[in-house]
Image 1 (cartoon, rainbow, N blue to C red):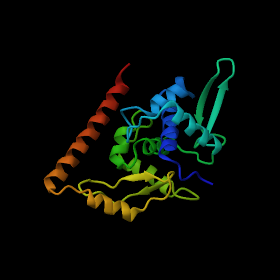
Image 2: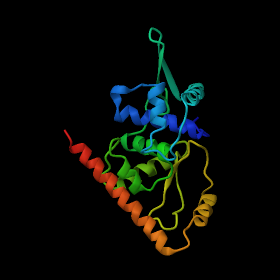
Image 3: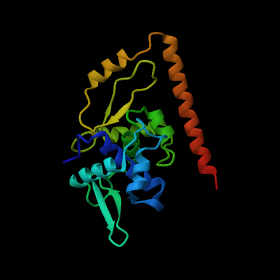
Image 4: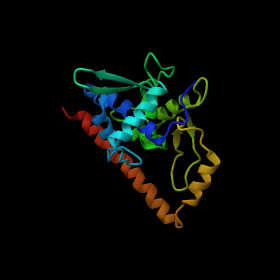
Length: 217
């Protein structure tokens, strides 16, 4: 049975462990302090959280009970380290390729995103050739054998593309999401256009920064 109804804290912990296993493999598995810092990062997180070490540790225990996280303990030093078991382990039925892994990780850490946003933000996790490659990976997660892992949301007014969201937190009421998006629509078309343009510029800048980082020695 696939995991579902994970809390926001559980999604954040799993997402951080997935991210750090790729971006800082030399520091993985993570200690409680490193995991807490990752959960509370001010960048690449939405929403930004302020979890205490105690809250993170309680979340770790809940995930361990669900067999979604493994605890490794160094008895000599008395230090625990954590590894995610949601996917790509011998204990998990979820085996993602690099593209799917990156998408699930980003959705867990930053919530609903468009293909363009996922591509712009995935630089350290996976390099997509174009937005079509992102959509192909998303469709694979939607058509996942057994049950969908991702859902396509109605396009928000003022946005060029539809957003996608993971389903590990439970089913999403797509119609309710559409109503909330309509209610949140700015009153003036100019404001919508301005927000959309700023988002596109931000996505382009994030992609450019990611590319520059790759070129650094």
